[in-house]
Length: 318
Image 1 (spheres, rainbow, N blue to C red):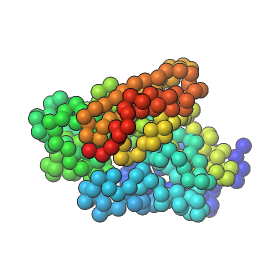
Image 2 (image 1 turned 180 degrees about the vertical axis):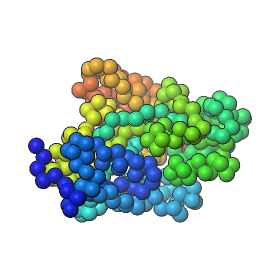
Image 3 (image 1 turned 60 degrees about the vertical axis):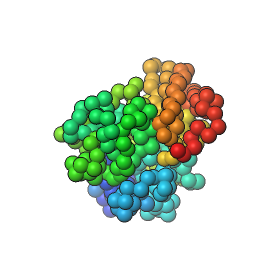
Image 4 (image 1 turned 30 degrees about the horizontal axis):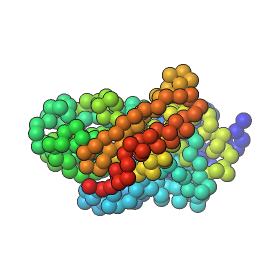
């Protein structure tokens, strides 16, 4: 039983980025914890922390992420606040998270996973196949860019950074004829009116951990550990253990186009992975199947298989 539960006088501080989607994820975390322990909203305080990746000057400049940094862009300041005691837990989109956490922090709580698919978003067209030759598509994701060029090398890709609302505005302003968003984000924001088409994972495999929310804590915070255990989704944890082991073995970052998705069927886990050359000129895919409990091993095994097929220099920037 959890002792010393938070109160309105001494609330549990939940750290998050300030975008509408990040706040929606923090609110979901607060609601789940409140329901699990019959606590009012006032027993929690949502603390918005601006990260390097949220710097408007970087977003507006449309600089590629590879020129700014890596996944830590969206987590560093939040994790520093947790280590200093400014917040108690942190809510993250798992596809933004580095595989390794800073010393003293643990990531072992995941909420039930949302739709993992990418959404094709356009005011004119319904699908990638409908785009005319030479059409301009906006995306800040190297994975999506490589996957798209692998299938449609005739298209022109432009940088398209920012949160969901920023990207939709750019689309409306005619910066591009189409873009991509995560179905999970659109669902969590209730954005049913966005002109979108969900892309089957067989056509465009999603980013590792896409659609999953992770909650990070200090390793020595036993209260947070016990509270988060009550809302942890076991199935999502099993799937992400395999996917993140796959990513870690590939040394994945925002500079490497990698996709991966684990699915469960009883006690059997299937992990499909894809790696691409940065210019989309070549894509390698494979999958492994085995006992669910061996997910991390399967992830590393799949990475080794794809790396052996790829050879040296596969991820070199082009």
